[in-house]
Amino acid sequence: MLLQSFLTTRILGTTPILYSGSRVISVNLLRQYAKASVTKPQETKKKVSNKSASKKGKKKDDVAVVPTEPKRPPTAYSLFYRDFFHQERTKFPEKVDVTVLAKLAGEKWSKLSADEKQVYVEEQKKSADDYVKIHKKWLESLTPAQIAQENRRRKESKSKKSIKLIKDPKKPKKPRTSYINYVVDHIHDDKEKGPDRIKEIATQWKTLSLEEKKPYNEAYQKDKVRYNEEMKLYKENF
Image 1 (spheres, rainbow, N blue to C red):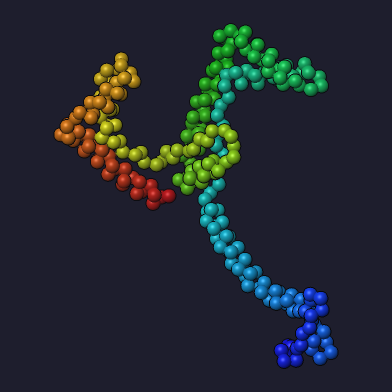
Image 2 (tube, rainbow, N blue to C red):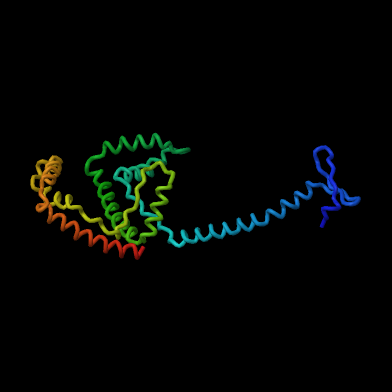
C-alpha cells in the first residue's frame, strides 16, 4: 500500500510517473488495477441476468412440443405424376430431366380418358377422407397452450407462404349478436335473391322497433351468459 505523502509526480512526455523512494511506478499500471477491481460487480450482474433469462426459458419449456401437423393429401394429378415418374425415369440413363418429364406428364394426363383419371380421383378421395380423421385427432390432442405457442411460431416465421393459424376446437364459440340472430331467422325467406337478400334484411333491421328487436336481444344476452361461463372454464384449463 502506497502512502500519498511519500509520492511525488513528474511529467515525462504525456505519461505521468510516481516515485516512492527509489522505485518508479507508472500511473497506467495503477489504472489497470483500478479497472480490474471495477469489473467484478459487472460479472456478478451478468450472472444475475443469466439466471433471470434461464427462468424465462423454463417458463416456455413447460409447454409440451407440438407434434407435427399431418400433411394434406396429394391431388389426383400428383398421384398420376408419381406413377408416371417411376415409369419414365428409366428412359434417362444419366440424369433425369425433371422439366422434360413434367411436360410429358402433362401431355399424357390431358389425353387420359375419364375412366383412367377416375382411378386417381378415387385414390385422392380416400386419402382426403383419411386426412380429415387424422387431422381432427391431431387437433383434439393439442392443449390451448400448445395452440397458442404454435400460432406464435407461425406469426414469427419468415416463410413467404400465407400464414394459417390453428383454430382451437375446444374454445367456446362467441355469442351471436341480435342482428345475426335476425339474419339467421330471415335469410331463407327468399332464397332466389341471393346476396341482395342480405341488403334487404339489413334495411329491415334498421326499421324494427325496440319491441320487435326484443326477442333477438334477449337471445343474444342468454347466449352471452353461456359464452362467459364456458370461457371461464376454458381459461381455467389453459
